[in-house]
Length: 477
Image 1 (cartoon, helix red, strand yellow):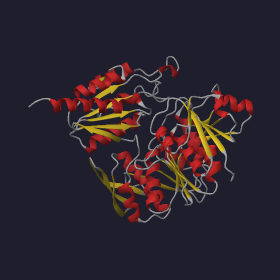
Image 2 (image 1 turned 120 degrees about the vertical axis):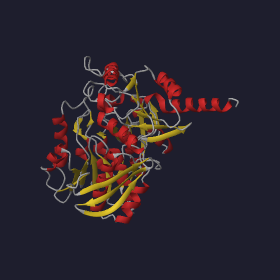
Image 3 (image 1 turned 90 degrees about the vertical axis):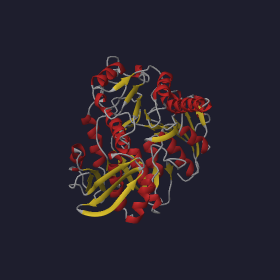
Image 4 (image 1 turned 30 degrees about the vertical axis):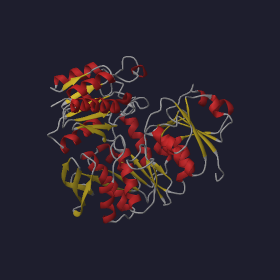
């Protein structure tokens, strides 16, 4: 595939699809795409990369026919472009299949998988290896802060990938990560998610089992020592296994962990030997675990301790992962991707440990395919315990959940109040913004949690707070 191709991506603005588009253009191909309801950061990335994106889906977007059409997993039968591809027999492929064909056969892929923490761990590892001079390729399901995109071709032999267990396309129901030819696999955790395609935790575990089964004998599996599902998977591995965690029983362990508003520090032990005191500006126990996985992989590929220490300390984080969007009148506004109960709990626990004397407003939008169902209705009742105030937004597109299996905001608010949590459901983004503008005080933290755009609530809140601040400043005396 050395000649330049015209490659069109359907649903290009997904984080993985957008990153793939950037990678394909870096090979010299002409890349176009189409999508609807686009929003940053990916729409901004594609614009900056001068990749044209047609608004909406139409068969006309395939005139003249591209050499290859990459169909995102958000696309279903009935999509005009998918139908045109099938009718006209235009060559097509899924996103992970395209990644494998164009980028992975001649590299050593490191696949970062798990229900939570994939994006941050992938970005952190790519950052550390880049800072150490290994020049890896990478594709991250998000945009690292300070980088233009979450994708880069690189000249080294390593290629770092975020390995998603979600299916590949409507014509390929395998998990994406099964395409990625792993040399090393990190599995951060295994929990139930993606209720739209998996019926049980056992089905999810089977996908991870298949991933472990394709790691070569000279490869490496890295996973938490205290996760029973991951250790059960590791027992079937044909390769070496490195455990990590907070207990001395792990090969890579973090001890004497300390938290402050600027980040997290810990003593790193390999088996029982102290190796370094490491620091990261990322908050929370979950990011300590992410850092341990990065340490295990980086050391496996020969990164020195000074380079590793410096790389972890300088990693700036990823957009939408507890990202500070602004501070007004002493009120800090965060944007976070948390939508699974475990992730919500981890985010709020991280903020509490970093600054326990500051009030936290947790503003949550039930939006993901699993969240809009009742799978975690009860689990969310305890996920918000570390928040001082909880505001629950309306369910996003509730009609996408089967009738009788829809998440109830009213039930969650009632359950939270029974636990003594100050919770309410204002009913709209505008009402939430009004509530925050009227009640948040200097020193407070507002964290918005959603896996989507959340109606632009971050900027709307910051603008309202700035307007109030100007009004206070204008008052005499």
